[in-house]
Length: 206
Image (tube, rainbow, N blue to C red):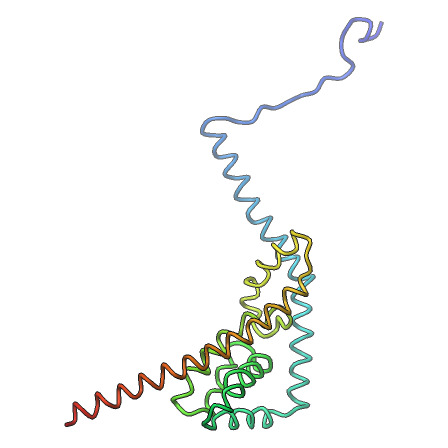
């Protein structure tokens, strides 16, 4: 005689009900807490196998390029940007910030302002600091600490099935236009504020 002939199932499934009440809240809280670190671990593994090797290779290549070009040649660009005149706006607020951020990375890029007169330094800083994000799409070595800003935008583009390469190029081009405008506007504002300060100082002395 078998269990089947007796009308009994061959196997019985054992189920455990989820805890409820106070212990249920503790169980769900523990699952959420562990899940938080599991998600962090997955992100870390993705960085180790993805962006970190890329950053190391890029940093090595850029350092080799700096040695090949020579730091003194980059310094000459800074000296050229310090010259007065509208014709030097693109050099001062476009070429110099791009070269500074690309070669020196963030935050060392701002040290290139030492070649500029005091009246140009705020505008150069404004241009350079505004370029540390647009460059990360194509050259993440320039600002790896804040790469999450670009990756957050790229995640949405990837979800839509679009190319992130097109996003990176557009991000860079828009950044170039923005830093030039910001540099010129900030220089005009700085010049106006310095002239007001000089006028106030003369009035107080008189």
